[in-house]
Image (cartoon, one colour):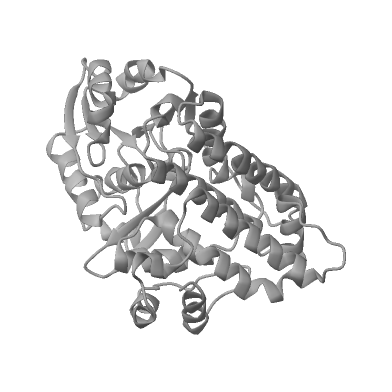
Length: 383
């Protein structure tokens, strides 16, 4: 286990009707609030009106229309609005995309240059406008971490960045707010949180047994309660467990002492930078094939994954066969809940691969670093 420091300052406010806590949480920061949200689903569900009622005391300004793969241009627009209106506090209402965009708004609002400078590391934030979240989609754990992923359509790049200054001050997690999610968004959330765990499970250290055991347990719970959310979208217990699992999956505690691999995310970011598909869909199509590609060099870890997560029988099988069966079972589970498993299902073909590979902006992979030639092979396997 490597040396590490960990601090997570985000206050989690969990349970039914917790938006009634908004006034007391925001009031210490000031009266001018920027409300950030996505395509308008919060208006259809009534959440928008409920939040405005809770914010009646404040001067509320709005930034609507944050994209599923949030654009740097949208974040820049929000940062400019924060400066123009002297915003004291930002409230992100939505899923990971809205929260990721808000993080860049928060940091860029204190910077006179281009918001993209922060994403590419040209500028390191020194301060940020405080913000909180109301979570409506269980998936990314952006509600309890300091990471963000932003798309630049001009450069055809989708890049992750982070800063300890962009932890949410608080996050309200009310499972009932996920009752009305479209089925595909629930599916995407399940895939996303499982992929986050897998990225950390397959890591660069020799021994992560303690964390492996925690990750194996969370994965099993997701596979039990995720389908229950799909069968009955208003199952409060199932939604609660999935909401907590999504937060636990990437709030930092599952990778104390190591980083994880993250090659699959790098591979997916290049795909969605070019084709603007849902992040989790890209992961469902690419990650199992990344696993098959690297597994021969890491058989023991993939065997452990197969046995402890998917209860793969071991008798009369080689270690490689056991490992491959576990990978196939993961792919089958995602397929069974309705996730795509091939790039061709989103009209992505062999001739598109060079363009996608060119969108890979950074070295990817920690457990096994990948070349661009490796990436091309994995994309071909994913067709």
